[in-house]
Image (cartoon, rainbow, N blue to C red; front, side, top):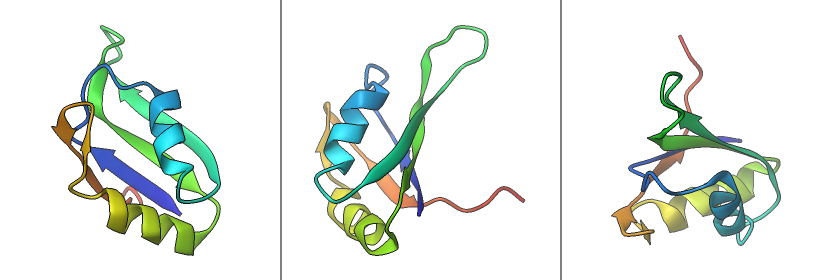
Length: 81
Protein backbone atom coordinates (compact mmCIF):
# COMPACT_ATOMS: atom_id res chain seq x y z
CA UNK A 1 0.00 0.00 0.00
CA UNK A 2 1.28 3.45 -0.95
CA UNK A 3 0.79 6.07 1.78
CA UNK A 4 0.91 9.88 1.58
CA UNK A 5 2.23 11.70 4.67
CA UNK A 6 1.77 15.46 4.66
CA UNK A 7 2.25 18.53 6.89
CA UNK A 8 5.67 17.30 8.00
CA UNK A 9 8.26 19.33 9.83
CA UNK A 10 10.94 20.25 7.25
CA UNK A 11 13.63 18.64 9.42
CA UNK A 12 12.00 15.17 9.35
CA UNK A 13 14.24 12.59 7.65
CA UNK A 14 13.24 9.39 5.85
CA UNK A 15 14.71 7.28 8.67
CA UNK A 16 12.54 9.07 11.24
CA UNK A 17 9.35 8.30 9.31
CA UNK A 18 10.39 4.70 8.65
CA UNK A 19 10.88 4.18 12.38
CA UNK A 20 7.38 5.52 13.15
CA UNK A 21 5.71 3.45 10.42
CA UNK A 22 7.53 0.24 11.40
CA UNK A 23 5.51 0.23 14.63
CA UNK A 24 2.55 -0.79 12.44
CA UNK A 25 4.24 -3.26 10.08
CA UNK A 26 6.79 -3.87 7.39
CA UNK A 27 7.92 -0.73 5.51
CA UNK A 28 9.38 -1.24 2.03
CA UNK A 29 10.39 2.36 1.36
CA UNK A 30 10.03 5.96 2.51
CA UNK A 31 10.68 8.95 0.26
CA UNK A 32 10.64 12.52 1.58
CA UNK A 33 9.91 14.82 -1.37
CA UNK A 34 12.54 17.54 -1.76
CA UNK A 35 12.73 20.74 -3.78
CA UNK A 36 14.88 20.22 -6.89
CA UNK A 37 16.63 23.56 -6.59
CA UNK A 38 17.33 23.83 -2.86
CA UNK A 39 17.27 20.19 -1.76
CA UNK A 40 15.01 21.15 1.18
CA UNK A 41 12.06 19.02 2.18
CA UNK A 42 8.70 20.13 0.76
CA UNK A 43 6.96 18.91 3.92
CA UNK A 44 5.48 15.68 2.58
CA UNK A 45 6.51 12.11 1.87
CA UNK A 46 5.37 8.81 0.44
CA UNK A 47 5.80 5.42 2.08
CA UNK A 48 5.26 1.93 0.73
CA UNK A 49 4.03 -0.76 3.11
CA UNK A 50 3.94 -4.37 1.95
CA UNK A 51 0.73 -5.33 3.77
CA UNK A 52 -2.52 -3.42 3.08
CA UNK A 53 -3.96 -4.15 6.54
CA UNK A 54 -0.82 -2.82 8.22
CA UNK A 55 -0.97 0.23 5.96
CA UNK A 56 -4.60 0.91 6.87
CA UNK A 57 -3.76 0.59 10.59
CA UNK A 58 -0.86 3.03 10.20
CA UNK A 59 -3.14 5.52 8.41
CA UNK A 60 -5.82 5.25 11.11
CA UNK A 61 -3.33 5.65 13.95
CA UNK A 62 -1.11 8.37 12.47
CA UNK A 63 -3.58 10.66 10.67
CA UNK A 64 -3.93 13.69 12.92
CA UNK A 65 -1.10 12.55 15.21
CA UNK A 66 1.62 14.98 16.22
CA UNK A 67 5.15 14.28 14.98
CA UNK A 68 8.11 16.67 15.37
CA UNK A 69 5.77 19.48 16.42
CA UNK A 70 3.35 19.21 13.46
CA UNK A 71 0.00 17.45 13.03
CA UNK A 72 0.47 14.91 10.25
CA UNK A 73 -1.98 14.25 7.43
CA UNK A 74 -1.76 10.55 6.57
CA UNK A 75 -3.86 8.87 3.88
CA UNK A 76 -3.70 6.36 1.09
CA UNK A 77 -1.79 7.79 -1.84
CA UNK A 78 -3.74 8.05 -5.06
CA UNK A 79 -2.02 7.22 -8.33
CA UNK A 80 -1.04 10.15 -10.52
CA UNK A 81 -3.57 10.90 -13.20
